Image (cartoon, rainbow, N blue to C red; front, side, top):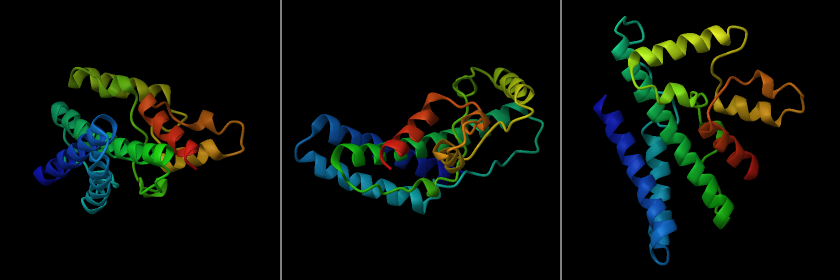
Length: 180
């Protein structure tokens, strides 16, 4: 869907512009950066960025189409996590109330880095199969809010039940824990 892609690009643009304004230009541009932050959060909510996108070709046998849908969905997810990271960072650095609750994020944790950086559809599919075989007793994915709940749990084995994920997801959980 081109509007989903357009909205994703717009959110990414606001993210980069506010980082530039707040961290590089500073001074009076910081006010603009904070205004962009509020606009970006509003846009993320109104365009459905908090929700996972539905894959259009889940029942196809075309590997390239499946890989492209994975890339689109993972880009959507990782953009939201970047928005969440910057929101938590402004809270930590500037004591600005967080604009995004972890409960709003309906996405799974980011996939392992090797899946995200797979150079071809065949390599990606191979990694997916291996991951499913290695983790047949445990889930291969977990929603972000469930992972946070597991980290906050007093159970000693709570983190062992979390499927593997990359540092990108760990940063989000760390930001949540630090800012809570």
